[in-house]
Length: 123
Image (tube, rainbow, N blue to C red; front, side):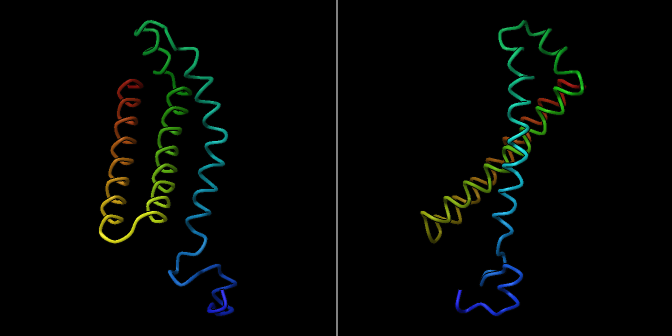
């Protein structure tokens, strides 16, 4: 970090002008998942093996639907950022760009599919 100016060292910005933004976003999303995943497990777990109408009635209530939707949304955004870092670390060139685009597309598509399913059940 010898090439950083005092201002950039203070602001936490490196040469790419992104600095700690990515790390902070991963920290915040992992903290959110720390509470969401156990809530999801305890709301989803009792419904395993139940008949389909009972599961639909359970997830049409607001609390289980909101917990499931938040877990899906935050989880896939956390996955997107983590997979992007992994790809940036272990690949380069055109392969890197293509893989990053594929991971971003996959994460948004999976999140949208999960959220659509929750909305269809809840409404």
